[in-house]
Image 1 (tube, helix red, strand yellow):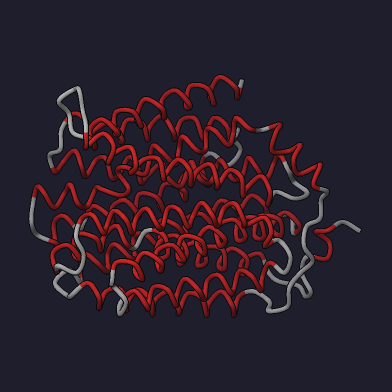
Image 2 (tube, rainbow, N blue to C red; image 1 turned 60 degrees about the horizontal axis):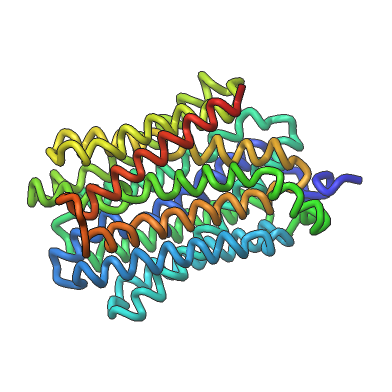
Amino acid sequence: MSPESNFFPQPISARSIIVAGIVALAVAMGIGRFAFTPLLPLMLRDGTISASIGADWAAANYGGYLIGALTASRMGRHMPRNLHAALLGVAISTVLAAFIQAPLPGAALRFAAGVLSAWVLVLASSWCLANLARQGAIQFGAWIYTGVGIGIALAGALAWLGGLQPAWLLWLELGLLAAVGTTTVMIALPRASGAAFSESRAEQTGVVRGHLELVICYGAFGFGYIVPATFLPVLARQQVDNPLVYGLTWPLFGIAAALSVAVVSQLLSAAPRRRVWAVAQAIMAIGTGLPVLTRSLWSLTLSAALVGGTFMITTMAGLQLARELAPHNPTPLLARMTAGFAAGQIAGPVLVRLLSVQSMTGMDGMTLASAIAALLLALTAMWLWRDSR
């Protein structure tokens, strides 16, 4: 009997799987990973933290995401139970962020949120895609990735519409929203754990070594998107000091992410995943390069739409490709691709800081990092397109 045949202790509908996947990724990524982005300019406004502390908190979250990605494959046993626990941890860490905002404890909370969100992304992707395939409904797997855009849009809209509130109150509201989402997933999925995937360590290593180029391309994606994903609201605030204006960039980012996945899943469901990934990465290169040319409000808005509109397509195509290449147990390859992504997104802000200290070109660190990111995205997009032939 195959490992997937025992994956459910009781029947569960494809609709429940999809709903649970959407909500899980909305909570983990939209809140656990990215809530800090729209709240950072508000916390700077309130004087809660300084720009340097904000950078440290962001780095802590990226580091936690890397650790979570590296350890996610060990969470393969008892997937539903571990998924529930990780989501609950995201909700708790978000609520605590409303009350604990000292530099070191705050960084620890962001680190924990990074670890937990990586676990949820890998576990939810592996678990939902495997069980949709078990029911012959794998064509609907792309829909779970709309959850990331939905979560980003909800968190961004809350920060945008509630931008006149103190930032700590917004953290509390987001934490309560995460708790509601966690409860929804617990209701939608069975509490009893299904059987874990099983595969020998030699087989796992062989899968990863055979597709190291995918890990590298996914890491380039992580490096390329992180500069606009981290700094767009801050750059917009430099243009217009009104939260109802600069705060709109992040909801646009999330809406573009959710809509793009929905459109691609409908129109390009049969297209090769490598080509979908290549086109999305090329468009992201354009969006990442726009702030290099100009930082006007229109260019930042367009950058948010282009990067947000391809961010989840790239994520979806990459993780679906991993599922195709390792159908019996995608978790190790998913975890290593996510680790490459996490390493790339750590390198982005670090490079911004290093280039800001010393630049020989006359451009600031953010501009140089954006240019490097755009070039790297373009090169890997060309490689993916060529390899897909």
